Figure 1: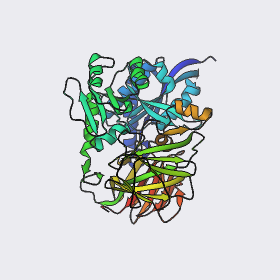
Figure 2 (figure 1 turned 180 degrees about the vertical axis):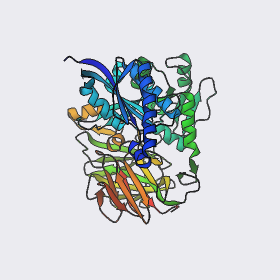
Figure 3 (figure 1 turned 135 degrees about the vertical axis):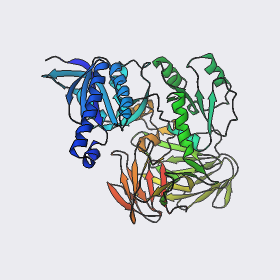
Figure 4 (figure 1 turned 90 degrees about the vertical axis):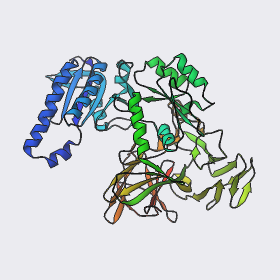
Length: 510
């Protein structure tokens, strides 16, 4: 029996198990009937054919990858109109059809992609990306994922519908800290904040208007400049991202505006921190607060031989900045703080610009109004932790579950996702070379999109590890560092360590 290249689509009713547990038999039959009457005609309309119905899911085959992904987007839109929540996974490759069924690696891959896809999204494999018309399908990276039965981490991608936009970490952080500079075509350049992240809207890639807007910006790190685009030709995407080193926000201008608006609506500022409001009327039982920088031990995975972080005047740690006042350098066996400008004080002694201080357990250093305290770690994969004031807080109510990660579910606390490799000193050898070429960063290597969850229960708090390969740790300044396996008990004063971020569990408002 010969094989043929096909694109395989799996549709799945999200939260089907929970729906079954709550529904009677008649309601369940109505749910499955609605799913079937939605999926089957629409698959055929997009030149596909349903191979089998598994009750809560369908498998379909398409001759064209573009038709398959377009069908997925159409399905999502129509499903929302009838009150259904779908998740759709797509993969392309050789398929063998036997007696009305389909087999092969592409079928297995599509099934695994579908299992990783969040509700109300269409995700697809790299093989589908390479086969489809990329200018016709708006798409974005969905990150690297470990798929059952497959070696290594697999890149996955998401199709972007016109009503949604996924903001990248630097844009989210800039919006929350009032550093986002939005430049629109035809509008005057607004006032430039300190250390800005620039978002360009309404521009066509390669146009004179875009070139003129770029020329009018202050000198910035290319990775701080992001372009809003939707339908984008592969050559334009490559030139903007890989040749120029800029970032992309995939979405319609309206969807991007709404995403930024939603982000700003849930942020309330006070002089010392940001607070994310979950739901009006809920009383917080616990605060999750980002309180510092965790320093992984080196060498790291035969990839990183050493690294640096730059400290800004406002207390933020970044990969690299021309406005940094101090630089932290981590090498095997030592952590050194270099003063890059006046105003650095270590253990009440001023540090002259150009001088350095070796960090030891208990050392306190201060820049401006921000106090930092270093804690050495004797066990585990970290050299030490630097604790400072809370830069972001997430109140969590009784009986709520909050996630941590680069792209956590709601409600969630987004952890820093610092882009760029300027702060890394690489190991020798092919492993480090591949990591460098693949865009490796310390933050992305150690933290997943959904890293951990905190459950606030009656009289107790539990921390749950969500990522299989990126470990989550619990640490108390007076105790050891323990890895979270499954769910563990935690209390006020404990700290969650995820990648390079330290999150404190605190009493509300403390």
